[in-house]
Image (cartoon, rainbow over all chains, first blue to last red):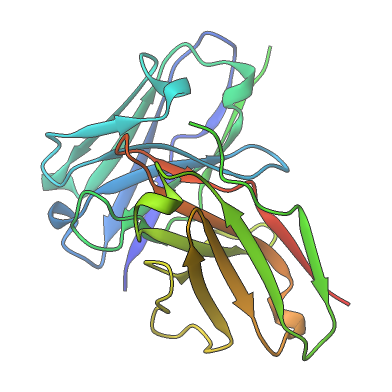
Length: 121
Length: 110
């Protein structure tokens, strides 16, 4: 059974940093592109970033470029999102999600339960 | 990258059929057959309902179907049931190698 478990969320002040983690199990983690998708309270889904199986290719939404870094450790079956310079508008539930197939144009099939990030003074 | 355009809400009575539209551009929905649909119940993670425009994952009811014409994709729910009441999101691959979601549609079963 595919399982994705996010952690690392919490309350931070504007300008601070936070590192989210996602522990994957039930599939060959190193064979799939992985994503971070967020959802602000009461709002819709927003794709944030994705990373290739071997970490050699990464893509970001414009609002994350230069502030967020996606990375992975295939030996630990883990995905990460380093978030710097956090803003109030980054407040959201952050989901880890696996692409359906190991292809560069796929979209997610399995999702974790999410971790809440709150940015407030 | 602008969000794909979905109606904010759609409603129907039990047993009826409803259709949710998802309009993008030739750089996303119109340019690729990588349009996915997700269902999300309150407080829950999204669930994949349709992949690659019109394909259902194993375990998803046949009552859910997808299609695309030009820059607009559609999700149809036939034989509407109370359990179908949820938010629905479309998503697409884009020419910038990013992904984009629609704003979401709240489906209400009357």
